[in-house]
Image (cartoon, rainbow, N blue to C red; front, side, top):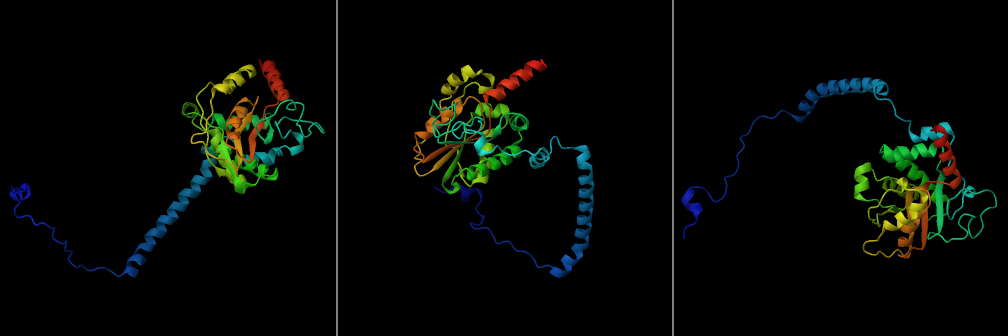
Length: 293
């Protein structure tokens, strides 16, 4: 049987003919560049004039919604809490000589599933506004720079960044779509850069109502419904693991996640948060809200 190719196109060559380019005069390269330089110079001068005018107009047309965080810190004189002002087991604010080897009065009767707790400050004052900016205005750069500060505090607390894994508190795709930001992930990215640890998203969780919408009595039950898991069952022996979140309120969510991580056998399990909502601070905020209403 004769192939259809030879019936429809019997005179078509099997191989395409080589493309022939006829010679033409080409000006020397140096002359071409020299001829283009004045045009490029004019374009660069025009671009610089436009950019300089825009830099003058930008602060007027598009003012800062908030100064950069380092400027705010410098203006307010804010500094992270010293290590001796909070319990290194639960993160709660303590006074002088209130902490011993078994923790403070808040956690002495219990045993947290982590080994050490590091925070930047209590959840009050300027810290409340900064965390709200991260969560509700999608301020990712603020989350990263505050996370970097938290990572530096971990190093000061004795962390070896070369053998550390930074694990953000996992979120669900629904919550990420609604909020438009994975705030714990952005903070953890900053922690990784500040401490030198490796950022890895080891954990997953099931969707459940936000802890922010529940009273303290319902948060423990809700955290149990979150059902954290470690896909692939990684072996964490030989690693220090840092569980990162934005705020610790009752600690129910952190405890549920830390128990899952602890089963993977890390050498040391750290918890690092931007702020801890102490009971005294929560009571003060409730009184403040009731006074305003």
